[in-house]
Image (cartoon, rainbow, N blue to C red; front, side, top):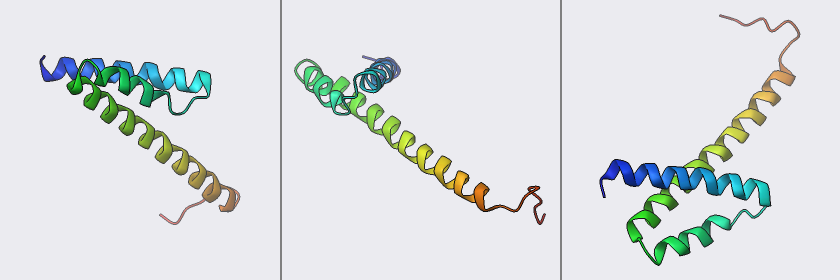
Length: 84
């Protein structure tokens, strides 16, 4: 299978799995999906797990960034003037 198609399939499955995880509250659902993939396609399993890790890492980093910005903005002087 062409690399691009593999990444597309893995990315779409990762998006759908994360949506199902959000809906169900099961934050380990992706491991079960990975096991199903492992039984039939190691290549797709590896691509899927990479896509999941990337998305979950981005989500975690974005939450951190949003919290940090909220803290900084809460400490900023009224009026939002900056030195620059």
